[in-house]
Length: 330
Ligand SMILES: [Co+2]
Image (cartoon, rainbow, N blue to C red; front, side, top):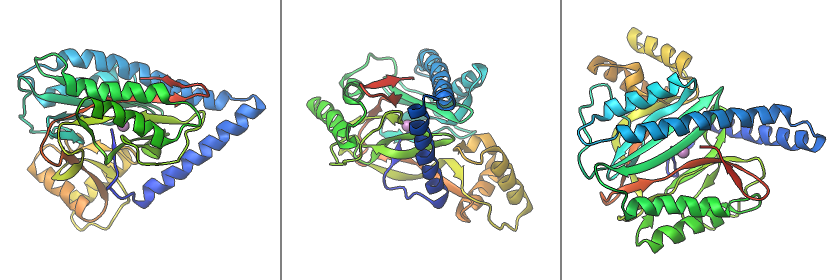
């Protein structure tokens, strides 16, 4: 699931960024002493999550056909994650055509896939907070086309240049080169991101074009790389609709049922994003959820659509940066 650069990071997220630095230091100290046990255990959990998400990706592809409801695809994917013994890291994003990300069907969604739709599926699962994040696009009822190949080859190009010491700007350059060679634009305000325990949007950001960034990847960094390609202008904008939220902090609420919902969310989804349909099933519930959004209890992940309404495709893998290259674990 991408990070949208125009979304400001609220304080709770900044705190999580500090945790990344801490775990990195731990890695460095421990590897110098030859005691990588604790950290390797974390990598093992990322890998386990990766293995599960890989299986879910393969099985979900067969499930995406014309006439199938987005809601059924979402239920299938989220059900499989649980069945294979992982937890959901974020609501499965199922984005059609000009929608780039952050769409997940609400409880009453009747939308069905139509022939020729670009269907972008972004899936994340975790083992004890260690996340695997991956995405793909298919064209319903049709073979993969050039726009799908552009984001996929952009991802391959990025993964082929990544190693410890590379700047994130150089990664973006590799992605941009491939996508523009296809005659398309990368989405400039969506980025890949670091993954830390129970945090899907940790530093560093991985741009999808050469933004000149001189931030360098380090051995042991865990990042999700996710190029987006479009026939449009290469920028996404917020739609009014929001179906994915995350908990920020408890706030005063007068309405008893709204307070109950707030405590339920705080207890069940204290860190990772959740879907509207996981917590409310009807209009009354939706109203309560909007109250929580308005008073700052929740952070909204707005549906992101391409500025000009042009179709978008995505490809994503999560990796561990190594001295010589990277290990793809999704
Ligand atoms: Co992601």
